[in-house]
Structure formats: structure tokens, C-alpha cells
Image 1 (cartoon, helix red, strand yellow):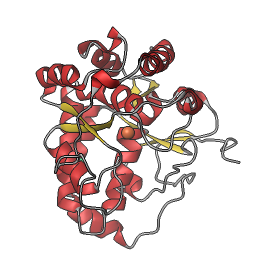
Image 2: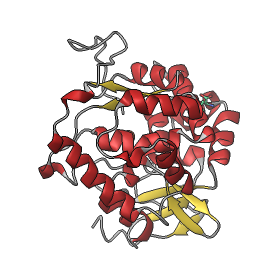
Image 3: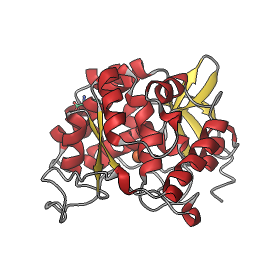
Image 4: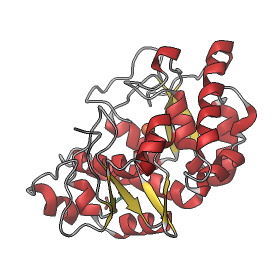
Length: 283
Ligand code: PHE
Ligand code: FE
């Protein structure tokens, strides 16, 4: 996730904004918090999450217990797809974020939520960042998509279209659904790290579930204060990578620059609708 326009890294951070994870400083209570969240999510995700996510958990040895040590995790990720996980103090500027992604480094917070924050957080913690994002980085196609996204971000930076590109990240990397035969599955990190949204996104009658369309997604507003009102469904990671890689976003940005935003809950005549939501939750 990215923050705003500040450019100098905070005290104690390197020029690229990374900080040591200081894994040895986590308390038993913090490790226990991870284990509690991990057990809750892994108990519920089989049959709901894309199989590549569960494979990733396995490849990365994430069921060993406790908050993962980023060095150990990065060794395993490096062997699988050449990615690493590095610690940052909090939200980082867009350019810093893109630069890391383009170099196959995923930036993660090192702090973990408190029991009072079990189901609601203002800023992503290590459980969201690592449990939510790391497993799919062990998937070669998804790994390439994330790098390409970083490169696209660097190209788009300082052109005033980052808001449009951010919507693509939001509706894929954070809140994406994927089709598996006739069924839908979860893959977005914001969903798979959330107990409530893991059920809501897949089963609740409230939200729309709409086939992924690049331009459409880039025009669609999103909610940061509640569950999403629309989720977008990709056919496969291969298809997502192919569509985004083979499209030069320059003309796409130009095309949608003057176009109106699409509301969070809208359904268009051109949408491929999987579920027309009741929007009862939002009301
Ligand atoms: N094709 C995009 C561009 O021209 C780059 C990109 C690839 C962006 C994959 C997001 C995801 O900028
Ligand atoms: Fe995230």
C-alpha cells in the first residue's frame, strides 16, 4: 500500500524506506496473535480461496507457527519466484512502492494488530501484508503480474493517472475474485486476510460480482471504510497478466481521463454479471 507525497525516509529507515524486521523483538503475545489469526483464516479458506494460495502457504512453510522471519520467508520466495519480503515502517510513497515491486520486493509492515483490532485496522499489519500477499507471490504468473504492476506504476508516476492505476491494484491484488469452473474463489489479499470479508465477498447477496474489464475497473470508485460493493472476477492469473501486459496503458489513461467515475455499486449494460447484488449491506 502507498501513502502520500512525502519523500524523505523516516529516521532509522534506509534510503529505500526499508527497516530491519527485528524478528527477535516480537513478544510471545505477538506471535500468539499471528497464530490465532492464521488458524482462523486457514480453517475457513479451503474451498473458498484459489488453490494457488494454499500451495503458496505450503511452499513458504507458513504453517510453522509464529510471525514469519522475513529472511527465512524471502529465502523460500527467492527459490520459488525470485521475490523477497522487506520491512517498512508504514505506508511508503508511490514511487518507493513501485520501485520495490518492479524489483520483486514486496514491502510489509512489521507490527501486528492488538486484540482490540482483531477485525478492523487502519493500516495494514504484518498479518495482512504477509499472510495476505506472500503466498501468491510464490506463484510464477502472479509474481510476474506484481512486477509488471510496479513497472507500470513507475511509468505512470507523475502523470496524474496513478489514481486509475491504484484502482486496478485495489480490485485485483487486494479484492480480486477468480473463476474456477462454475465457482468463484477468493484471491485478493484484503479479502483472504479478513475473516468477515472472506465470507461476505463470496457468499453474501449484497455485493455485485462482475467480470473483470480493465478500463471499467480503472473508472470504478472503491470503498476504504467497509466491505466492497462490487468485486471483479478474473478468468485466470494468466489472463490477467496477458491483458495487462499486452495493453499499453498510455492510450487507456488517455481514453478514460475525461470519462466519469463509475459508482461503487453500479452495474453497466456492458458488464458480465455473475451476481447482481442487493446492496443490503451498504444500506
Ligand atoms: N501494460 C501496463 C502499461 O503499459 C503495465 C502494467 C502491467 C500495469 C501489468 C499493471 C499490470 O503501463
Ligand atoms: Fe495489501
